[in-house]
Image 1: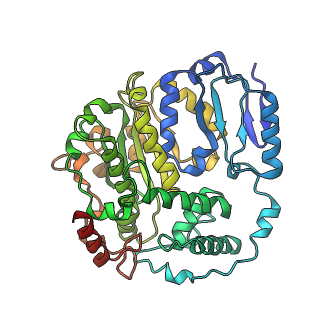
Image 2: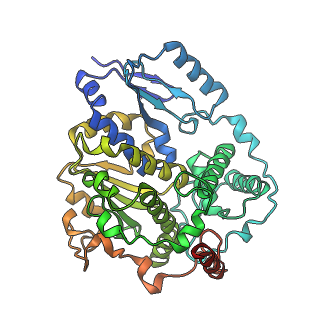
Image 3: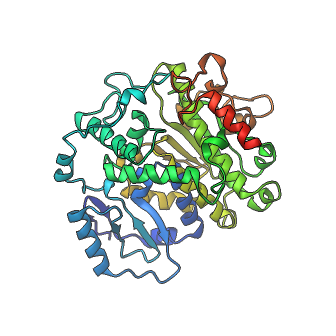
Length: 436
């Protein structure tokens, strides 16, 4: 008999023996942990699974202390500990609980004067708001007075630290939504991402991501894709880019003979940059309204007990890039060919996630085609996933979509600058410096 418990707005229950076995299944645990990179940081931060190799018996006193502290002081990382699950530790950010107090809201009711006008940053060269009446609150086209003040407050804080790029309103709104409009947390997330762009263990301090994007070439892609296909291909029925990842095919040993992990991660970062510019702006131009998210298909066919653990280190780094540096990009996520262990664990995990986020995600077995075709036109979906598309040379390498259709191309800003605020002349000059 399950005894439901409710604490701080989160449903908990005593699991059955089958559920305990599923939660401790190595394959299910690893796969769930990796999928977090495809969810917005704002949602998966609500239930990041941390597995312990120890007996994992967590002290009740610590749980009580952290939960109490979370309600009263709203810490950035309160702990939600599930005592009946000895190998799980849920890391739950306060912006997914009811920690956002009236006092913190009141503090943000008075706009702080921004040192720069938003007009300086918001000269978009594509549809940049949602249609009237169709935008969720906090999205462009439906921003409250308080949220508008928070955008200005965040921009002022970042300008005071010397930041000048990526301060446009839509970008700042994404960071604020990812942190439930907590300006301090959004600032910390933005700054961390900016530091990462210029200094990390992938490309070091010698260059930065803006320079890399301008000159990046990845000739080993066809060979790498034999072992780990990851690609953008056309659009769904809402006009969003479709991203396909076949996780079950990954063979890190074979990939390591072709290229380095550093180059694989660099290519991943470059592709994320290209989502912001040119993919989403081109898609927005084609449909005549703002699009900020993607439709993702994650294929788990072939995932086995040796597949994920052997590549876990690399995949965890890849997931961290997504959730830490590119927030609020998930429109829909279809997890197909899900193994039993994954499906059972997900059914438990989803109980702790934001319902809005859960609605974006569908976990499907092998009979997924009809669900995909409800969201993606058959002519845009590769044949291997139940569609009719057969791109010349293969869909994986075609990069087909509005971003490669001349009538939908253009600069990110009317000034001619790209999403990072760099104009073509400056980018060309930077490229020459890098190649020299």
